[in-house]
Length: 191
Ligand code: ADP
Image (cartoon, rainbow, N blue to C red; front, side, top):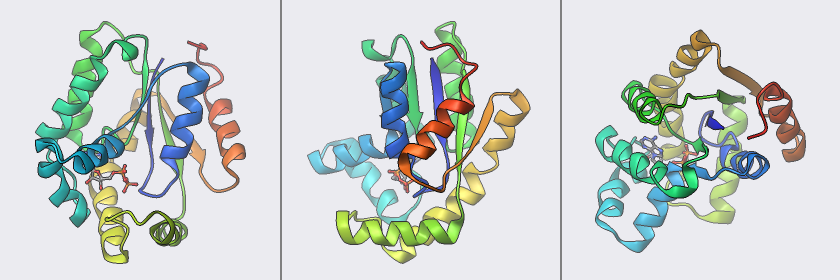
């Protein structure tokens, strides 16, 4: 099972990614989490990524693509994976297509969590108070929404045209949203 999970910053991708990946026994791979881990460990990748993240901008494609390529080459991703937060640009879509085609598989579905922008800005401001993520200031949150609208939202149409898009209402209780995702994927094989 090869899945991607899309949606604007604050849509709840990370939370849902964990449940969905568990259900299909595949790893949830979050580019944001990998970047943050590298930042806190002070690796060269973290140093490179940090200035973009702090500004709410995307890390350059070549850096991100290489990181994802390495991650999905790991043995635990051989049987499938769920990507949370990747691809986010046209170049990343092409790169992912290449990576998957190379292994003789295909992308099974692109799940997109739909949410109201104002609602999620509020959610992120709330998270800023509890988690204290460096990129959760209002200015950076707004910038992340803009970058998403410009660069990532158009990719939804690409997956719609391919017939693998599954749109899921991302507003509501966490478990309810998880159920909606499973319902949207119910025609896919379990593994
Ligand atoms: P958000 O909820 O804002 O989307 P993430 O945790 O998914 O947060 O990502 C945090 C930051 O990591 C992004 O703002 C961006 O700088 C960087 N990032 C994550 N995924 C990608 C990607 N696919 N391409 C480029 N940059 C990325």
